[in-house]
Length: 242
Figure 1 (cartoon, one colour):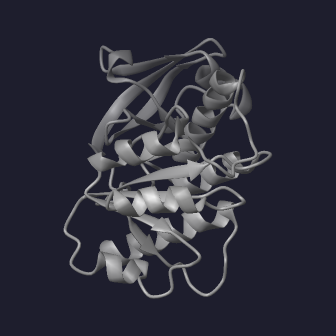
Figure 2: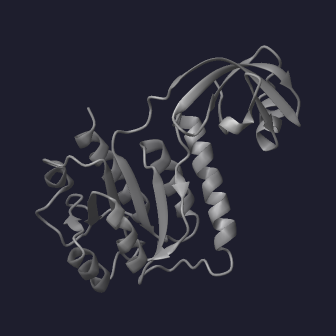
Figure 3: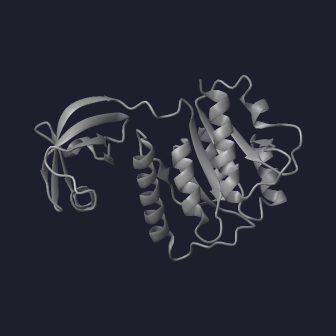
């Protein structure tokens, strides 16, 4: 069943009123008409099962038949601090991390990052947020993960202090794994730091460790930047969820 996101403020007399791009997508791309069913999530963890009462490219009215709690959100909230990668790799990273279950993605300007955002950060962030929303629809999320503004590495380290656990995969770490980290971990929020193609600089690793971020190994093979975050997130959720 097709899924869309809407705010509770769009509910009028027991129906969601949808306009703009989503209305056009429902009526002209999916070709859904009166009587067809869709799921609308309020972005706060509640799914509404609806029947279309009106469908045009400018306006869709979806009558709410029933609602229930969305059960797809992970028990542990994971934030990805991603060193800016080259080309369009960030789009893939965002899409797949949303599918896995990350709740927030923060682009990070690092010492070895080749990609620059000067003059185009707002446009990039807008596009990245749309990718996050599309991925959230596709995989049935109960929220739309936030793609935050780009920050420096030191800003990311300070921001991550809001999380109860923090890790940074590092190729020179040989003994301490994510499995070691998860043993006995009882928190509900984790920060994961992933470097760009060139990895983190020694200065950045030193800063992270001095601030209490745990250096972990992801195994014997060095992973690409677009792979490392996915692996770290998948292992964390596997180890921490039932």
